[in-house]
Every structure is written in C-alpha cells, then in structure tokens.
Length: 173
Image (cartoon, rainbow, N blue to C red; front, side):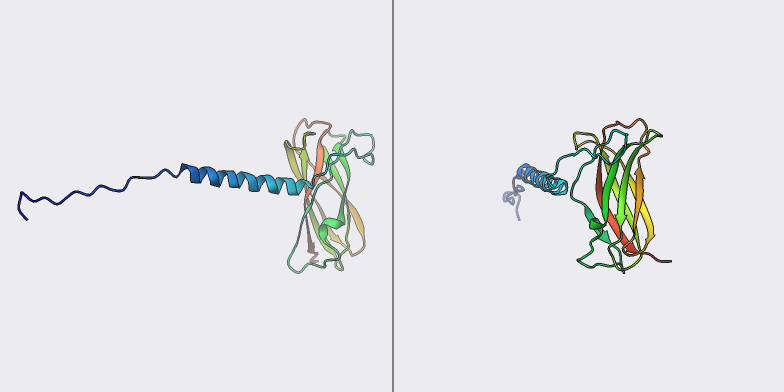
C-alpha cells in the first residue's frame, strides 16, 4: 500500500441509551413487591382483642405463611397455620411487647412449632420489632400457649401483633 492510499478509518457505532430499560425493570420490581405486600395483608384491618386482660391491646388478623419440615405431617387436612391463634397482644408488666399464641397440634404426630410474630405501629406499616415463640413436643390433638416477647425498649402501648409465619416439624425425642 502506498502513502497516498490510506485505509478508511471506521468509527465505532453510536451508543444507545438504555435508561428506559432500567426504569422499566425498577417499575416492575416495585409492582411485584406491592402485590406481595398486599397479598400478605389479606386485606384485613386491625381489630381490638378483648381477651388480653387489662393491658391495652390491639391485634391484627392477616394472612399467615406456613411451612412444614422434612418428615412432618404434610396432610392437607392439618396445615400448620390453622394450628395457631393470636390470643393477646400488648405490653406486659415488665414493659415489653408480648404476643400470646394458642397452639393446637392437629397433625397425627408430636410436633415442634416455631411462630414468627411482627410487632407493628398502629398504621400497620411501621415495623417495631419481631419475635419468635416456640412449642416443643406437643402431642397430637393437644394444646399449649406460647409467648413471643419483643426486646425493644420503650415500645408503644398500642402496637399491633401479626403472626407472620408458622413452621411445624415432627418432634424428635
């Protein structure tokens, strides 16, 4: 090739903006999160719980997520979320938020239960704290109660309690 003939220089293609794509992805994620939150609330509203004694109490009835462990009774007739009932929600004598949960083992085997509880502000949106209640070795068709107690200092007296998740596993002795 001679000096008088030069190869034409090629320019890289122009970059296209993909900002619209990221906006669409973000909007889709927000919509999915909103649907999940709405489905977990079950469209229920807070109600006063009159069974908790003299403590100021409020409870909220929402959808409960349930899981069963390996080897547990996975019968459709006895899902674990049907085995629990929120009986009380309020501030106990030591100044801690406390949820009292009744548990009835409707499975055919002795079972261990783990119940996750959310403590929320009365707006139903603001999370104050979470706690866990457990019942171990509950025989079939027997009942027990368990308390989930928050460790949060100076909790509001009018918090809402929500049973978020129930796990039931076969008890191993």
